[in-house]
Length: 296
Image 1 (cartoon, rainbow, N blue to C red):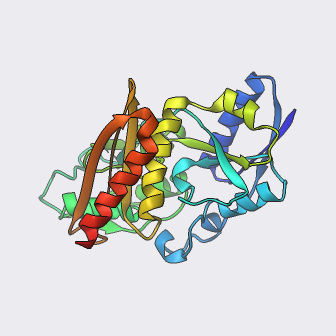
Image 2 (image 1 turned 120 degrees about the horizontal axis):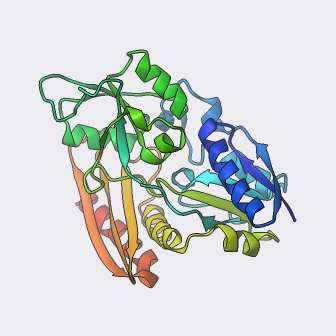
């Protein structure tokens, strides 16, 4: 069995693809990595929410799967749209890393709790921007694009006092020494799927059972199916500041999700818990509550 692994060409994407490759090869499967450029990689000059459309980091890989140019595609789970191509499915989720957002700075003196000055914080995420504006009114949010290492270069050049990223990417790229703050997930709540790696394949793939048995982490899958049901119902995307985080403990699943106004003026939240087998229903229930709050 020889598996062609499709991935974006960024350092972080390649790190994730190589992790998958290593796990497959440890299980006795041969593989190769196929790099594919996406629209999100090509367009770096404008904020993501202004590029337009969904699946900016996934469509090219979807096409490669449907054309059988690759056998599986490795994604950051948060990049996968709420609705995927009919021919495709998510077949596995690797065990999730810490999903929290973190603040990176070159000086340990940078603290968003310090109200004596207006800190300039770089982010490309509408969610992060809206939550920062809600909790830290004195912060000036400035757009930043590029891969993790590119953003760190911009931070070190002095263009920003700090930048806000997902801990998972920061850890995987080796920049933990720059972390000055880990945000509380109950206030600065992560994006749906953040910290997890997802594997996509054709519904006709002959590799599905083998790859699931090697790669899939059941608790992560249950949590992300819940989060994605919330996202699908609320129809969030790059143009909507949506957040959601689920975790499994024992036989229960705990989920909280919500939406923020783009200017940070309001944040709508809801929390639920229930049996793990009801995770998808719980995600949908929270979405309905949030939509009612936003539209009332």
